[in-house]
Length: 326
Image 1 (cartoon, rainbow, N blue to C red):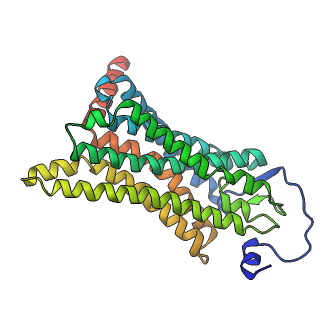
Image 2 (tube, rainbow, N blue to C red):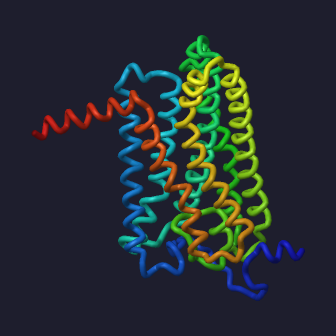
Image 3 (cartoon, helix red, strand yellow):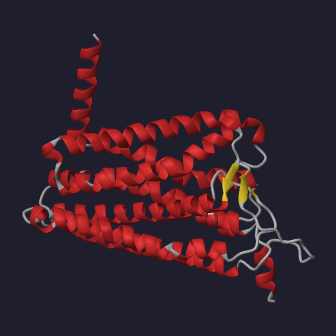
């Protein structure tokens, strides 16, 4: 066995009694167990905003006929993806913090792992599709509606889902083939590498494939975004007046905020996990939770505040509720 393979195992090279593990125990945030109750407060707040905010976005776009446009259909996809991510990861984390409910069955762990990683990839794909939407809106405004028809939007969304599902399809197999010597996961959810590190057997394949698929999906989506925005900027700077340039660029501001909120935590998390080995475990776990916590909370706030049609509809809903209560 090579030195790299031995180091990838993360277990002592001694005789270990292999056990067939059917239940894992989620530790939560190691080193901070005493303050889990306090940590649950921001987690609960973020979860509430994520669920309520994205549900309102979906309701408004569905009920308002004037919002049945390509940009808002992509926003619906984003909101739906955020709801899946939030409800896959956060309820179990809150169960750990509130009720000390740490047990998770092996199969449930695999399902949580697969769904969380697939829909994080789906969100990345939707963010890149929203860059395409902005490209056609700015560079081909007269043909915008005819290019991004409902059928094409549905096909793009389905392709994004299928691509992510296929990329991460090996995860359950790669985890199921391992023999585990421990069952305590130092995390708030079943993250791929955190679970793989409990194995007695070689996890080089898991590490290599996990890093490859993350870099591949990220490189594809980020490249698509960069190309789209290069074309957008070329078109914007050809406009005659500063006012027209600013008006065109302002339509991209919400999308730019969403990109920043999504990609910065993801890239930072990947860097911390793969290269910053001296960082405290609790920092690893907190950073890893950021990209599951932050985008689902921030996305509805960004589009709710910056998009006039959604903002007006929200205010109408609030006013109508006040009148009913009064």
